[in-house]
Length: 237
Image (cartoon, rainbow, N blue to C red):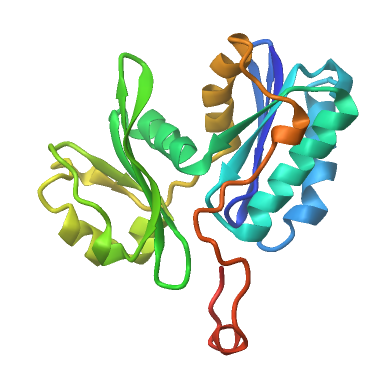
């Protein structure tokens, strides 16, 4: 299949194209420039793959949770390109995409995905891959790092920016669950478009992709703006 995927939920812009099994990808530290970069870079990646938008068969995107602005950008672009190209769309949760990224790197099937949610909180979920399919052990949620839910069993790997910002707190909660190896924490991993492609392709193949108007972000945190005092403290959503 010819599929396009992208993620703007973190400070990185991540793009990927599957062209009948051949992968093309682009990842860059975009900061606050996702909205300026995403469409030109999608076109550049299409050019690299020698494809046009109307030759694509579907669009997948990182639906969140993550940066409020970032997940809105991704959903908006997915809707726009989906409508423009009459293409089906598949939203993929960013925490699941992070788990897929971590599993590919560590070859470990039990992942505690944790992204820094700012304001002293983390987006958290836990997944286990069984017989090649991800099972949700703990649904995505928003927590103070010291209050993340406990898990059963051992051999877990922690992945994501939440583990970088709150290493001590999360390690204390999961001291008895983490794999006894140097790879038990992967704090630099982020959800990426290639992982989103991996997760979305079976959905497209099974005919379960939805119309463009169903491309909606996943927020988890209900607040979409900071108070003046919080902005003055340098806090970010």
